[in-house]
Image (cartoon, rainbow, N blue to C red; front, side, top):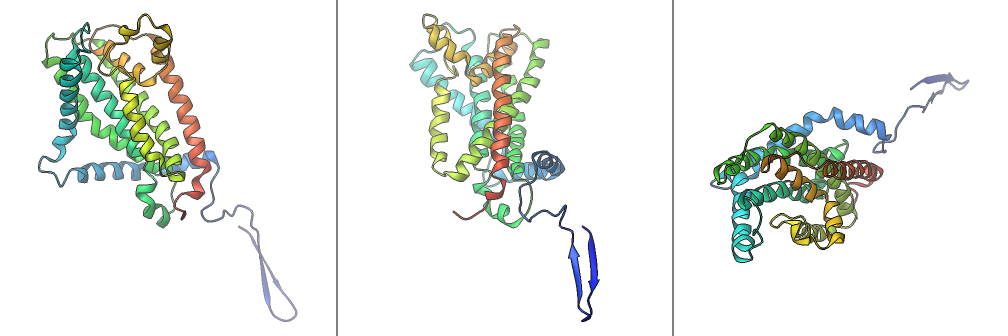
Length: 294
């Protein structure tokens, strides 16, 4: 910012300011600068994630143990209802481990997008009080969910190895690491889109709850798509389902010691890239509106 000073005959001093480079308070930065700001706030993201994990179950007697108990109890419920009562596990090799992977992996995404969609409305007071890139709130939620899932995933591995038939531990298990990384980015992109929608239309929160439940039933969590072998249209739609691709990759590498179909990676990667780009742009465009009174 440059200044010029002019003293008139009357002795009054006039200062002219060069407004080039000045940015209006609260103005939306350029997209590139916005992404740089998110990186600069990485310490805040980690601190917020860790602190909320520490306080999340502090009022419960079992504390952090619930992070592992919840998916186990859900899996036991689904096994009783769908495996025993409805018999959806017939013909599936090692159905218990098949179900465990489905429940744990789906829970990662459902928890991330449900919490991520409320990243702005649940932190409205912080949004109004401080100036920072709002996308860090959605990012912090997803980092927190990833941290929460680490002990859950370890429990998943233990359960897979505990129930017969015993599975082969091979190098293919390492595919689980990039799979979780892609799933994290997928969750983040979807969270950004949903957070923008929920901030604009709060009723979308109810639709997300309903949508994740339907998604659960359509992602082969507790049944095999082989039952639709005579319905090519249904099979085609299922193969385009990113959650089905996640479960298929995890099951092939962890249970069946086979290399996952490359098409599953392509579909999942395409979904992830599109959601990340669209989610970032949509969220960034509304940066100035977050925290405003409706």
